[in-house]
Amino acid sequence: MNHANSGLAHGTSGSPQLTLENGEMAAKAKENEEKVKSNYQGDRTYSEYVDLARDPSQGNKVLPQGRKERDIGLDLENQGVLHKIIRDPQKDKGAEFIDIVTGIKWDVKSFVSHPKGITSARKGAFKLSKAIAKIEKEFANGHNVIIDTRRLTKFDRESLIKAVRDKSYSDRIIWYHKKGENNE
Image (cartoon, helix red, strand yellow):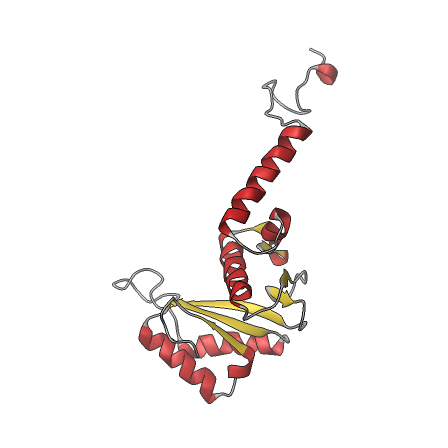
């Protein structure tokens, strides 16, 4: 069989490949963008929205952690806490976002009190000294830090807030709490 004009993708086993014509791809992209716009009220294109979740250190893949960071960044932007943000393109030692008005780089740190449930071992669980070390590492890289406390217990959250305040780091921190929790 001559595969040159068979309509099959090169290197296939002979099974037809699903393809979309340019018009279909454009329609699908527009449909996806409309879904994004219905959920996010900002002035982003679908491409910009996706790019905010890309991780340069992970081959520019969009992973769950990147989506979570994007959603935090966009929420803070929507609240007026940050100006318009873009993804930091720096691969090694890069932050998550750059505020394009101030030029400040922001890295998101998420801490979890009970990653395997409240009755499981504490492996990987929040430890104040490790949290402060991670924050200080970002400061050393020239970044400010957004701290996601949504998965911390009240005790751990309050301990972290106190430690940040005691070290006079508050001016380089944005707190991201559950709705209804006190912000620093």
